[in-house]
Length: 105
Image 1 (spheres, rainbow, N blue to C red):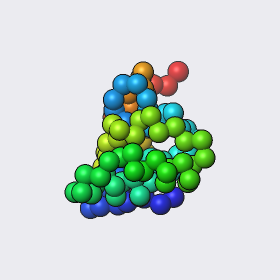
Image 2: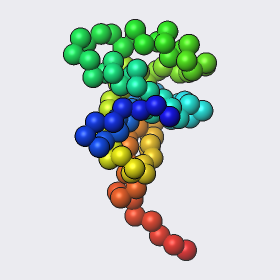
Image 3: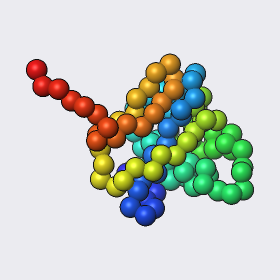
Image 4: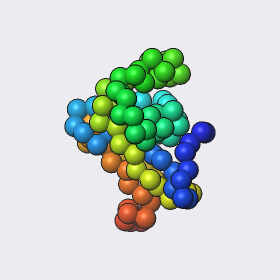
């Protein structure tokens, strides 16, 4: 899976705003978490409108839902770290495996 790595951290895309998630509304496309074109666009200093990405996204990911696009954020996760995307009412957050407390029955 293509991704952008900087200083040993991987760019992970998520949408923290309420209403529509990014990955949680597109779980059939896990590569949306790392898409280098989207990451590069967000990191660009040109401040191009995010709506410019819609034709690219719709061409690469058939039936993609782009509702979470406007609130897209990058979380830099240490390379090799397990994580998950937690969603509540459309608001997503990245949770690292080290932040979870697991119990055994």
